[in-house]
Image (cartoon, rainbow, N blue to C red; front, side, top):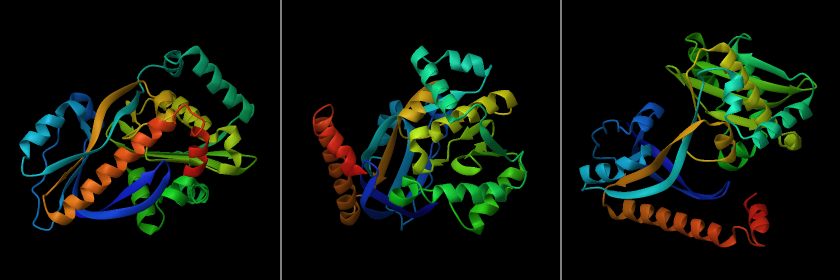
Length: 298
């Protein structure tokens, strides 16, 4: 299905501006990414500018490009799609971490208090309460303020969450500190796979690493429950995803566009901008400007 997609010109967490194209979005599932397969691309309507394919197995990039010579390809990003196997025990899972990582995680959990105050949904009751509490945290996060990527609000988002809960196809967690919600994690499911959809925390408590603590506790509960087989950390990389993952698939996000002047101009601008940002990151990494650049991105 073709829809207007806002493609961001982004530096770190800050979006400078966006360009809109009408694209057919094709999301490759974790199982397809692991197997190196590509879903069938839908036919493009006359109004469509092309495709946006996310999590395409990197090894299949030449095949997709060759199959669509009439379209111009632009690689938006290359990354490792991290996931965690939920087979076995939580102790076995932790044993796969380095000794330093295990020590750091347990220290962060202890720092939060002897007993973690975490509620999990749908087992805790109506997910309307989860949505309300999670939204109260999401509204404070940089994901929502800078990226517009907080937990969706409104009656349609809540209705969708309730529909998933009725089918036992979601999990949600809230971490409390002294009765105050300070972090949330929301994960809908596709079959036996839970999908890392939204995680956020109150920045006033950042020194306590609430997002990391909540992810740790959520993983512990998932191993104890035994309902799901995989936790999919989805596209994009990050220290959090690498830390909790047990494996990864090499993927690319690919923009395939029709060679119209307006469309090509937008795609080339995005491509050159991304290349310039990547070059700037390499230039400042490890040098005296790295901390300054981090402050500017915030």
